[in-house]
Length: 139
Image (tube, rainbow, N blue to C red; front, side, top):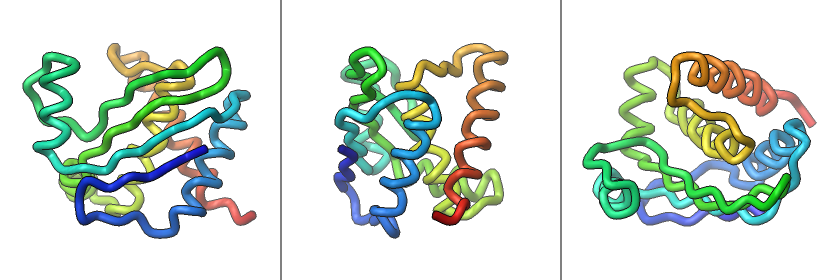
């Protein structure tokens, strides 16, 4: 099950289509879906989580807490909509495209992909691009 929760005024367009796409991505990685909760929030909300749980005093676009068991993906993914909007401007993409990238970034972490080293980050970007293309495939 995939759930979206809002701690900000931001609302995703077409939640059902996003859920189907996320499910397709999970299946493409030969995983199954448990319960994934997306919490969309503002910078201050996510900064507080970053400070309290990770002891980092920085703004970020996403924090994921993985509760997966084996191949069944579960967890909480917190996303700062303010960071997503800023990054969309920076990378010259639409807010929707950047949001999809961040949504799937969290799932890819649950699949085992990391982004701490340059090599890991390159693979993560490649996987993000691959999964973003899946969103644009007609069902």
